Figure 1 (tube, helix red, strand yellow):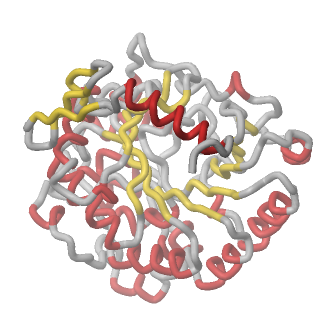
Figure 2: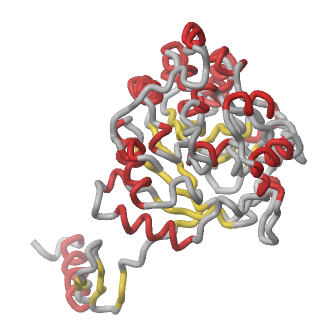
Length: 398
C-alpha cells in the first residue's frame, strides 16, 4: 500500500501506460473495450511480470479469461508485485490450485434456477443473469464457471421463459440484473429489458449489479443516465474494493448516476493483500460516501475454485467492522456477510456487542470496550399497561 491510497482526494490516471496520443480516444468506452489488455504479449509489453503471474496468465485461457480496461490497468503500481489493483485482475498460478472446500458454484445458483439464467433463491426476488461478459475480469469471480466464455460452463439464459416466469410469479417484487455486467449492453437493449420488467405489475423495483462505473467510467454517459432515469425505482450496486479505484473519472461517473436519482450502494469483497485492513477499508468507505455511494455489503470471499490465495479468515472481517464502528459515521459501515456455501444466502456476521441477556436486562459493550446495562421493561408493568390499554379501547377508561 502506498500513502496516497489513504488520501481522500481523487486523482486522474490517464493515459499512464498508454502513449499520449491515446488521449484523443481515452474517453470513448468502445476504444477502452477494444484496447483491453487481454494477452500475455500485451501484458508483458506494459509490465514486468513475476513467474507466478506469467504462469497464471497462461492458465487463464482455460478457466477465466483475462481482460483489463486501460482505465483500470493504469491504476497498477508497476513497481509493486503485491499492488492491490494488480492482485485483483492479473491471474496467478494459485488459481489452478483447488482447495478441498472450494466449489465451482459456491453460492448454489445452478440448483436454484427454475429457468436457465434466472436464480430464485429468496422468496420475493430473483437474480437475472443477462450476460456472461464483463469489461474486466476479477480473479475471484463467483461466477467464473460461466463468465468470460472460457469456463467449464456456458451461460444459456432463456430470455422469454425467464420473463414469463417472473410474470406468473406474483411474490417476486424485486429483480436484480447481473451476469457478467448488464451495463455492457447498449442503451437501447438495456432500455428494452427494463421496459419489459417495469411493465410487470408486481415488480416494485429493479436493481443492476455492475462494476462498469469502476472498470469503465466512460460508459456512464448522460444518455445512459437519462435512459435509466425513466425506469425508477431503480437501484445500482457497484463493486469497489480499494480506495485507489475511486479516481476523478469514477467520481464523476457516479455523480451522473446519482444526479439521475439512482440510489447507489457498494459491495466489496474482503481480499487478502487488497483490502484486509481497517485503514484501507476506512479510506474506501469514506471515499465512497464522498462519491454519494453508500457502503452496503462487505463479503467474505466465496469458496470459488482457486481462491485460497485471496481468502482471509472470517475473524479478520469481524475485526475490520469493529475497527470501523464508532470511528466513522454509521453510513460508512457495510454489513459483513458470508454467502452460505451451497446456496444458504447472505448470512450477517457482526462483532459481539451483546455480552449477556436476562429477562431483566441486557449487558452491552460499546466500540471503546466500555460496558453498559440496559434494563428490559418490567413484565409486571407491561401487564398493567396492557390492561389499561384494553380498558381504554373498550371505553371503560377515560
